[in-house]
Each structure stands twice: as structure tokens, then as C-alpha cells.
Length: 275
Image 1: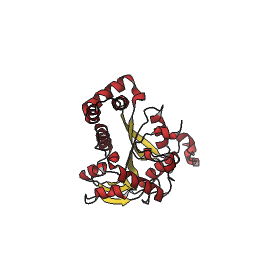
Image 2: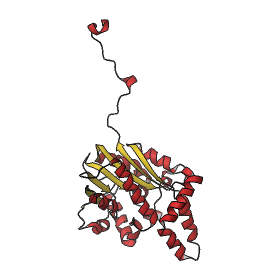
Image 3: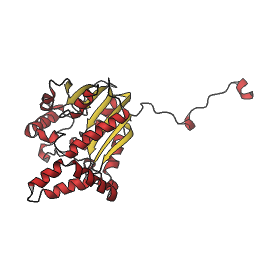
Image 4: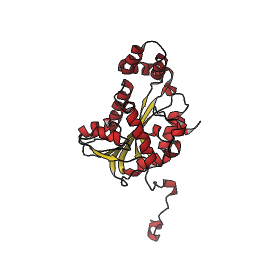
């Protein structure tokens, strides 16, 4: 099964409209069009599941990082929900997105806005204390995945943190494992925050076919139902019920520590030999 099945995105385009993922101009044109056609698809406040993802991302960050004074890059910032949240906590935030139509929504809110794109940003090496890149990888091509994580590792400081997330395809086996393997090519994962909303997602899909529009809308906004069904999913389906993953990580050292058994033995002086 292809690497594309590792992640899940709602922003799919027809085969004939796919673009060169390394072309800044083509990628920008695609996302400008998506933002013009339906900006609500990028809104992290549009339903209870998206809001819960923001909350869990916040909680994971605060478990390891005090944002006060931290130079932070929000790559693929979209609506800027996390940018604004971290700014309120005292972080110095650069909000980066390829789409000018996205950045326009953040003008006048005290954020430093930059138009740039993954996986080839113009950010300096080792620039940020904290790098945020949430639910972006699902919108890039499989051949870009390794470049994507290499870029996150490049722009974070040695002692800084990277926070990255993705929706997982609930119909794909071992989706989390594959996502983790990709991340660990460049990063050392410190911790995970996992969501188990497969049952909730399938129930919403089923309700779309019922002549009860109000039921689908109610499910879309009911946090109580979301969390209740998550408990059931974790109890009966465990890993197969995972729907979203967030990790916090540090970049791998450029020169790995030499294992003790391979470290050269220091040659003793004659006096030391006889002591």
C-alpha cells in the first residue's frame, strides 16, 4: 500500500490537477485556489473534532515547552489558531503559509507573516526554538515526505522542539507506524498524543445518508459524543481506531554519539600501566 495512505486529507484534487510538489509557483497556485473556493475547509474551529485537535496540540506543547520568549515558526499556519494561541502565551511567532489568501486573514493581529512553502522554505538553519507544523503533510505528495521532515529538522535549534501532526487514514493498516517511521528519519520523538475517533468518523459518514440533516450537524459539534465514542473505540478497537496523531520531537544530532563499545581506548602511559 502506498505511502499516501499513511495520512488523510480532505483537500484532495483530481489527478489531472496535481502539481509538481517542488514547484513553489504551482503549489502556491493550488492553495490560493483552495482558499478562494472554500476557506472553511481549513478552519480548525469548524467542528468539535478539529477543536479537540487544537486543544491536544496545545496540551502536548505545554507539557514540554514554556512558550514565553520562544522564537516560534508555525509552518503551514492556515487560519493561525496555534500562532495566536502561542502568541498569547508570550511566544514570538512567525506565521508561514504558501497562500496569500490565508495570510490576509491574520493581518493586524500582531504576528510576523511570511509567504513561503514546504519543503523548501527560505528560513535560516537552526532558527526556531519551536517549530509547529500541524496537519500539513496530508496535503503534500509522497515523494516530498522525507524532504518535509528534513526541513522541519533543519530550521529548529539543537535544543528546540518540533510539533507535527496528521490525520491518519482509518482504513489503512499500520498508519501510525508508517508516519512514525517517516518522522524518525530526521527526528527523535519525545512523546505522542493520539486520538481514537474512527468510530465517530464512521458514524458521521453513515449519518450523511440519512434524511436527518440536523443529526449530522449535531454530531459535528457535540464534544460529549466525540469523547464518549472515543472511550468505546479505545476499549474495543485500540490501535485500529486511531484517527489522528501529534508528536513532539527534537532533531537528531548531526554527529551521533559513539556507542561505548566502539569508542577508541585511550592509550595508557607507561606509568599508568604499572599502577
